[in-house]
Amino acid sequence: MENKSFAIEGMTCASCLQTVEKAAKKVRGVTQASVNLATEKLSIEYDEPTFSVENLQKAVDNSGYELIAQEGTTQTFAIEGMTCASCAQTIEKAVGKLSGVDKASVNLATEKMQVSYNPSAISVSDVTGAVSNSGYAAVLETTETQDNSRAEKREKKEKRMKQLSNRFGISIIFTIPLLIISMGPMVGMPLPNIVDPMINAFNFSLLQLILTLPIMVVSWEYFQKGFKTLFKGHPNMDSLIALGTAAAFVYSLAATIGAGLGYGNFSDLLYYEVTGVILTLHTLGLFLEERSKGQMSSAIEKLVNLVPKTARVIRNGVEQEITVDEVALGDVIRVRPGESMPVDGVVVEGRTSVDESMLTGESIPVEKESGDEVIGASINKNGSIDYRATRVGSDTTLSQIIN
Image (cartoon, rainbow, N blue to C red; front, side, top):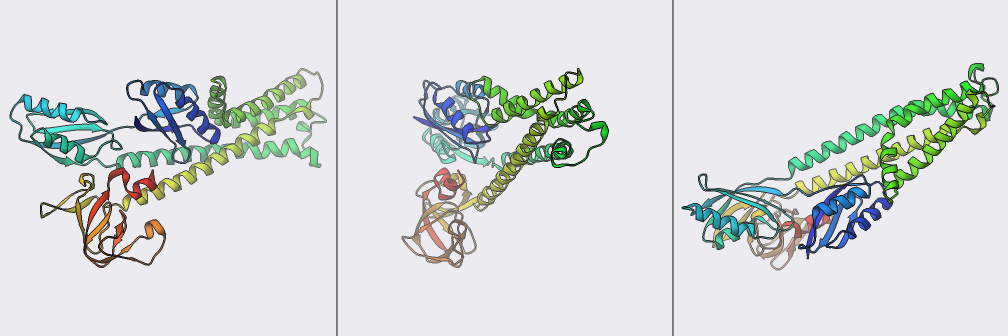
């Protein structure tokens, strides 16, 4: 069985979560599916021979949401020891066989290899190990970090918040006078004769219609998504909003037409304010939700930034500095005062105090000596220690918290 995660767009409530889960579980080859509403991610367990990403994408799309296939990371390695085209083919085959590798391409002229892979499935050390087993040497030349993707996601969130803010601003401008005009006569508030429901019912209805239309136009997204999911048989909160407000609007529109044709005074049968207020308040709720998600993403980004980019490891008695991605299980890592722990591990030499406030919230440093566990991203305060890596990559405590 294999595991994979995908980003899901369009979810707004627990009902959306359940809908996506049900749709994913029905896809051939999927044995288990779970959705995290806060992170907007779908995690599945699947049987590789029968599973297809295209089928999953189609199932999620039919349920009214959008699945974003996880983009693999591309790394460039410098290859040593190649002499001919056969060498390049051997390395490509060796790396291409690794589970999680999408594509491996070797350029004999430049002696470089580009590998596209799923970072949650394999690590850099797995790639270099496969090349080494083939009789060659691979050295990571560049490390593609997640800074660009995080920046894009942050920009997308900011754009969405601005869109909702503008939508709410336009909606509230028309909702307030709509509410005053529709509810004013009920509480004894006088209206000008030209729109007084007892004197000119049609103008009274027409003014409310004019005030409601801009709100519906800027809120068209709810109707588009809501009716789409409804017709697909997977109604969600947007379906409820769209159905309720559309019903109120159509009923009120019929009453307005009736008043305009002279069939009577139907001012008591108008529900334009229901449509306007519900759409406006729903937009406000979405804005507050997006803002809270943005704050959560910011907190996660701060956690990610706590992890150092490089680690100082002891291999064959020689101290060398490598990227965190290259740290393998069992590596002995040396950390000096003021530096952060690259990964989780167990102290093998030295004594120090460690600031673990990023995880526990406790500001008092914790004493560490041989045999004690240390957590990645915690800060070494006043002693130099050597510790053995026990959890690396996505298995570290910090990675588990973020995921």
